Length: 112
Ligand code: DGP
Image (cartoon, rainbow, N blue to C red; front, side, top):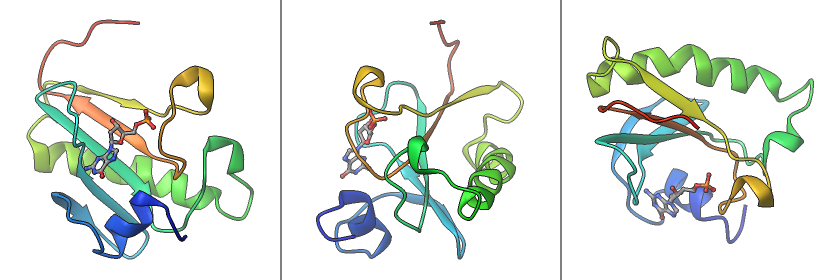
């Protein structure tokens, strides 16, 4: 989608540190990491937010979660543990409206 920064990352129009890619999704390091490991996992299809998940596009969400463990292994945090976070909408602090899942780890995480 035009003017979407994450679509530009998918299309290699702006650089990013890609750690995983297949035909449906891509994962790259967050530019503002909140932990030693902070990767964003996104669908290649432009879906604005979790509010835009439908019966038709929902399989990619399952694929993201099914691949998260592989990305955790790539990043070396599969044993120490990690958190997967989706911010949806204004109150959650979503700033990029191309749905993404933060994979965060590499340290003990506080909650909430
Ligand atoms: P959220 O608040 O959930 O919408 O998080 C968006 C994240 O995207 C935020 O942690 C910073 C990251 N981000 C924004 N622009 C870029 C970019 O151009 N490159 C990379 N690698 N990350 C970005």
